[in-house]
Image (cartoon, rainbow over all chains, first blue to last red; front, side):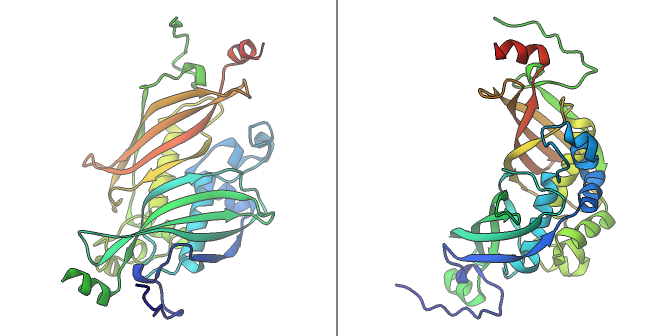
Length: 164
Length: 164
């Protein structure tokens, strides 16, 4: 039996409102050299993230953002506009890949797709959604692929029903 | 044939110096509430990372660091003291899990173990090392498990030999 879609588009999504194949697109973020170096100084102080000249002589062949910086910007985009989940975006973990480096001047945007939805057996108020988020630059190249396991709240009515 | 270990302990490790089962331990880092909130304001602005009172009413039941903050601190510890690799720590991706939240006042430390070493077939100057890094708090609880695929340089002599 297919249930009617009762989700109000202005409200954040509960687990019960999600569907496999559903997509969300974030706003964009422009990353510049100052941001790349500031993040690197704090969390990833390596020459290819800090020093333009030294970076040219590394595997990156030029200044590149820390992968963790790309991940952090992706999270900001998801939280603000990219994935409106009730209860917030709470990750239990996931898989990450950085197929290309993020460069100064890149415009990043995140497209997410719901790939799996699993209501919790033991906790009727929540479940797990697996969401694949691709972070692309302005040349449409994927700079990060994240397959995250998120803990998502269920609707109150739904959970009460399940709990009986 | 087992080769003699010719690695000088004062020098960073090339792929050829690594062995499966080898372990590295980082220094410690104390995370406080100010750091947690500063990171969250910039990259993960959600109530459970920003507001002590609001956090109590969430799944975290109190202020917790963003998982990406735990990941970024882990990277800092690896870069500075935790994993001395020639050419730096360059991740192609990996798997992440956050089994417990990082809390204000936690003392974090990273223990890493080499789990797989794969010389590149096409690039004689490098290879891939899979490294499992556990980030623990002062109660010895694992707050992050990272299984990272790292691109590691080979020794010059070694690679010249392979290239023939």
